[in-house]
Every structure is written in C-alpha cells, then in structure tokens.
Length: 150
Image 1 (cartoon, rainbow, N blue to C red):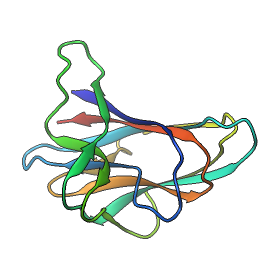
Image 2 (spheres, rainbow, N blue to C red):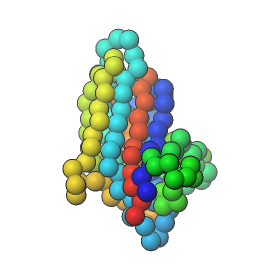
Image 3 (cartoon, one colour):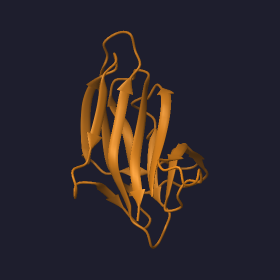
C-alpha cells in the first residue's frame, strides 16, 4: 500500500521541532519512504535548506496527525504501519546529526522532488522515525513524503 503525507503552506522556523515526522507504529511491517518533495510559495528569492533525518528517539505525548491520503482508490482509509505527524505535545523526536537527504532550494517557486532509486529508499521499522527540518530559510512552503508499507 502506498500513501502520501503532506503539510501545506507552512513557514518553518529554525528553532522549532520538525514540521513533519513519519513514525513506525507496527512491530511486523516495514515502511519505506520512496519520495520526498518540497516547494516554495514566495514571490521573492529566499534560500532554503531542508534535511531529512533519522531520529535517535521518537517523540512523546499526543501527536498531531498530518494530512494522509492513499494513492490507490481501493479505500480511503490510511495504512496502519506508520503515523504521519506535524507536532508532538510533550517531546519532539530527537534527531541524529547529519541527514539522510539534504536539499538546498529557493522558496521563490523552487521545487525539489527526490525519488529513490530501487534499494535507496529511507527505511524505518519498529519504534523508529524520520523527520524533516528546516536548516536554512523560513519561507512559506509545502512538503510531502510518499511511502509504502510492507
């Protein structure tokens, strides 16, 4: 099953937690992020840099669910192996240094679509998560992950 999780029209800041996180919630299924997108919505040039990072520890507390859609038309019910969130009430995920993917782009209509080659997907499984954070720039923008649950 393939799903899309998105956040629209946000203005990320450099001092807050991740603006989107995909967390494994199944003990028997694997989640593979196969696509990451980001696009700018400003009318002037603003340098942006986004990191997709593996988390050292998942967040705690109530999670705010992000917008999730299945990419097939079999049913509208999202999958059950991963939870796509935009915020945590208690503690945000703790991120590792570095990044699985680091993307520099321009918020003045710039667009990044990273599509994994076979075998290069970002994999998460039991009690793990991957997050996206702003590293540079705070322009209004939209983001998404496309993932499969096996």
